Amino acid sequence: MQEAMASGDLKKAIARAKRGHADAFQQIVEAFKDRLFAFVWRIVRDHHEAEDICQQAFVKAFESLRSYSEKYAFSTWLFTIAYRMSLNSLRKRKALSGEVDFSRMGDGGDDAGQTLANSEEARRLRTCIWEAVAQLSTPQKSAVLLFYREGKSCDEIGRVLGMPAVTVKSHLHRARNRLRERLRTELVDDRMVLEFLGEVHLA
Amino acid sequence: MNCAEFEQLIDSYLDGELSGSLRLEFDAHRLRCRRCQLTMVMMESVGSVVASDRPVAALSDDFTERVMETIETRRPWSVRFRPTRVAIVAGAVLQAAAVIGLAIWLPLKPAVEPVGPAENVGVTVAVDTPAVTPDEGLRDRLASEYAVQDSRVARREALFDMIMAKVEEAGGVLVADFSDLPNLARYASALAVSEDVARASTRLGEANPWDGLLRALLPLEVEEPEAPPAAADQHSL
Image (cartoon, rainbow over all chains, first blue to last red; front, side):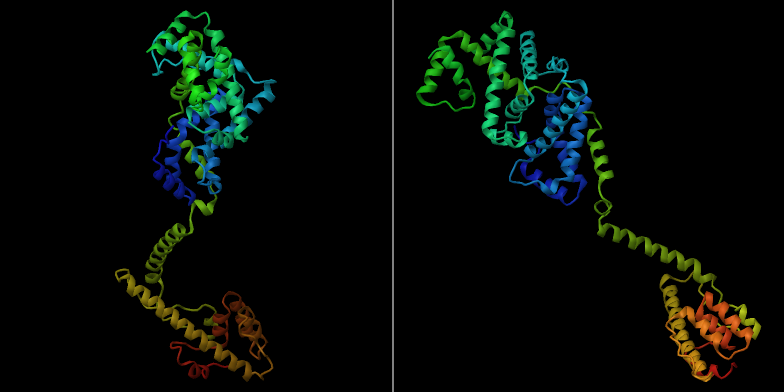
């Protein structure tokens, strides 16, 4: 996935923000806020919580900007901060309720405004996919989101999740297996979707 | 290749790691097996849905604003108000304050001010503050102020010399450190002067040692700083 900001502009903005220019950091916030929110929201599945985490992540990023090394993509660094905050938030939630409330994680794709596909079959398939993604463990889900949505390599995902690339690969592998099994179970009786998939494939 | 072997290779295929004859076997099985076709389409759909679906929820409109407000309030003072910016603002404020202060103070200051305690010994001190009207320009006012300052410094030096002379005249007993201004009045009161003069000197010295000594010890008008020795003859201890 391409940066919302041209690479050169981003470098300049980071350099200025490092010198304390708040207006430069505002450009960075504008460029990354939607992507970061989409990622965090998929992990915590709560709008206000996700927004709070994103806000804290940006503030933390600004305050720690001097420690950012341009050897790595800025988005990787930013997502690392947000991922750790998301994990903390999930842990707090788990500590309060005994366990993570997965019931809040269902029905991720019921947005009438989605533009991916508008047919009934496509909507059902999308809903099934997001439900299956929501059932993954947090590292698996994060790996899937960073891999497919952010286009990160296993090395970069490893930096975000704080684990070796080989572990990321393992998480991705297990995530795909779980998705495959779940989707197959969900869709086995859904002839409409299966036919849709068949048509997609033949097309 | 059977379905189980095919499924084991799906990951490698999706990651673009299949090549050569294995890729050929994979594609061949995919073409002839409808179940595996659907599996592959499902997995490719996962990729496209996750990659391009918009989030169900959206950020608040004022999100960026709130982030920036939080950043501003948490920034240390030294970062929020960088030294160069502070220096520029402070300089401008000081300049404005100086102009306003001079404009208010200079025209109102009397050319000759009576000295209360010195009335006891019939002394008045002329203060050579130039009369400046508000209509004069800033440069003129500043020049006048500098002249006043210079005059005061000169007068203070002259007073110092005169007081030292009086100390010696009193017998040279006192070795006073006149750099210690608050003690000047005390030294003066220890001189062989009349009681009321010493008291007046002490009292005035508490407010302004130099002026106190001047008014208590030197019953004369000091109009020109350059002429203190002549003036010294006119007072008595």
